[in-house]
Length: 415
View 1 (cartoon, one colour):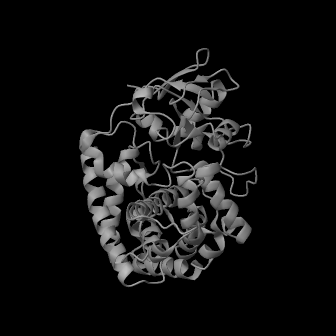
View 2 (tube, rainbow, N blue to C red):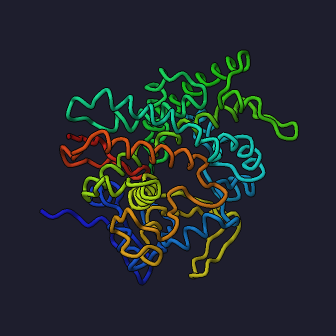
């Protein structure tokens, strides 16, 4: 019995049906994206009832287009737009999201990002290089003699959560609890989460928020040289972050600071091994490392879609008409394999130099943690392959049944 096709595409009407729970789709979404590029890179996704965009120029342009934003209720009411009221059982989750950098628009976004940004500029992040490298080596020391490892939980999860916890000044021994809260909260970014998922995410938000408020009170009483203390003290024109803003920002940095990087590291190791890319070529010098990491992020991105609201009535060049309050989807991972931008886009070429991928987004909401994510990958990948010569896949990697983050369930390796 043959599996059903992951997508039905009608280029004449630009109507597309994609079942995100079909393993043929979520195991290899790039194959479907390639079909979309060939037939209709701008399309109406029937199951989501929204317009989606896959072309590089269009996604890049719309991410920067100020007619679109992450919020809508700053320019219109729920009643005006016909939006449902907030769900009471998500009150605590929504409270954290309300002050998230990911969800804000100027001027609130500008103020908050300015207060946080100083810690994430490249020159600050570069200072973490010895610490991250030492962490990578110490983790590998623990399993090098075993001859095999499940890489995600043993290496890929530990590096980013440890680094961001240390940066914030959160006790590193809390890492397992931070991971649990994070996993439960980010399930809300899936398409159509269940009520059970919503209730669990709300409980995680309560627990996470309570913990962070306690840590913030402690930092106020006993300031330290860490990001949480700096955020408490940070001020511009006499303004400071409120407690709710501090909690939301810390949650975002802890969640985003490791969730995507875990999947990106696993995806990168998988593609390097599956394509039999020699480590001595991929990591031969600093330029090779940089290009290899960027190519891994281009064709094995963990985050596939961002959404935006139309802040006004908009007519796009290709005849798509949007009303104020309509939501659109921007397929970052599809834009990364647009053949108009990247020749032979499905081929993994570690020496590729065809321009910038969109895995970190673009414009106002470009990922604030991009310098940190890049540094973690540029250190953790070469160190892994250098320390474990003969590294190979022990079994076929299983992709997570999840479209919001494209990653693996586990990654079993041997050497």
